[in-house]
Length: 132
Image 1: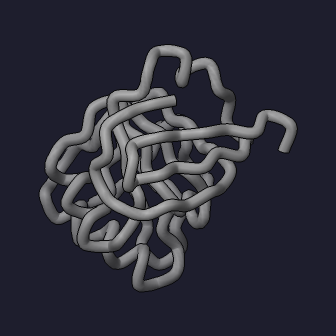
Image 2 (image 1 turned 45 degrees about the horizontal axis):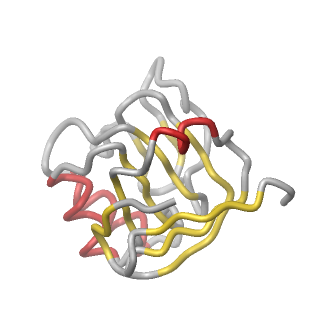
């Protein structure tokens, strides 16, 4: 599937999909890589090493630095996919060196969490292997 490249690099991992936006400041613990926002659909789940797909970021611009801290702690997502990138998440992905794409076609929404996907931030492409 073709999208738009936001942050360069190529990474693969298990897809973790959130129907809700994510705030990295106070929504994700940089010491554990776990979503801690009360009531969030991914509350209690680790984003470490997974391909994290969510509509867009929310909250403070400090969230960019939380993404960077996650990377420094070895707990960052392998890649990020957004419906529509915005500056908080895009800057965080770029400074942390996390591949990121957005604007994938509507059929992407049919891919379930747990599917092994590869994100190519150089070309904006996402491929999946539903048998993995």
